[in-house]
Image (cartoon, rainbow, N blue to C red; front, side):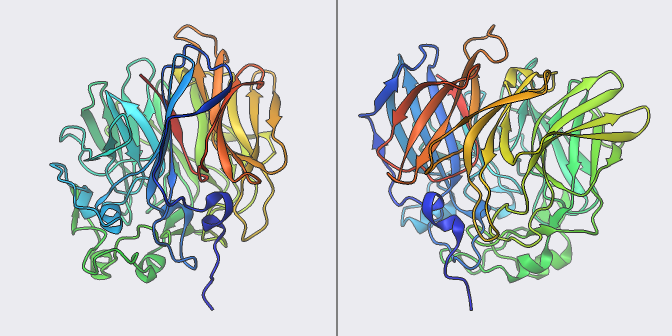
Length: 485
């Protein structure tokens, strides 16, 4: 019998059905005067989903945002990212756009939202292009960086703090043995794109960057053709729509992939599974490489969604990552295959081996640093501590953790029973502020009241600074960022 329930469609994960604009927002405490901008966070908000097959990563994207200025919260908004599918599902007219979706794959981005070169971009991995949004979160349309983006894009680009350039490693549904490294200038145009050979068709959620190297995580969660072939399209997809054209960028999609007539997978199952036969390894590539001189290091089988940071240390490279023991081996609705831990992998370039240290054995995810230190040596890191969950349940977080990686200590801010937190990100108090001089911010869901607050913590002490009371619930989601002015 098909499942009639799904933990990622219930409780704090359940989609909200109304787009709202709220301007009468109460602030408890005092918001720092240096906060002048928008806090934006995105996540899945499925329109129509089959509980038996729905995977959390596949829901249509909805952006939630607050405009903060002069110590006030001027507005809260939530808006769907209106891909062609979402527009049809909402019964709206198609929006004209001069930019086409990559190879016809037009999924509503649901994973990350960033600001770059004057644009607000909603991102998702595995093939679709970013979608540009207005400053008030309305959808502009697909973005190809002024015609310079060759294919799709990643959910996790990184900004080099020295140059302002946006670095990305992108992969595509079903593309074999290749990922794509690109560098987008501070002017918003891609200046460099190269292909990198990998072991198969891995799900490569993120990558790391140091001052000298691009770090690639080639790990054993790979494209599952059988699962893709049996995935049913959402009710609002046209029956003739396929995931890929025969040509994706400059690469050929395998004939078997086209022959299967795989339909769009938006709001369906995720066509990736744990592959115990796939070697787990980390690659390092010099930044200006042509892609042919990647050096590979074997690691124990695991999966990494989110590195905390990476940096060069003489003839070593230090990688701080959140390590999952497995992923999508038995649980196929969301990421729940054992507690993720904070680990340090030190790549010894001379000895050609990896030293593996456990920094914190507590379950945690969504690691963040002061992004002025991307690719540089960092001292502090922040994450959210995951509450224990049983198979078939959706994991949630109940505390914010601050790591001092020099002293090897940590402190945490726990929340009262019935409250769950999403990712918290760091915003410095100013351009010259110290590494932990600033605030952390994120959404906290109150199960009892069935609504959310936006909470600001002092990054040094984790003491509450201020909160904005929202009259709505923000469903648990993924990543967000602070976009100044």
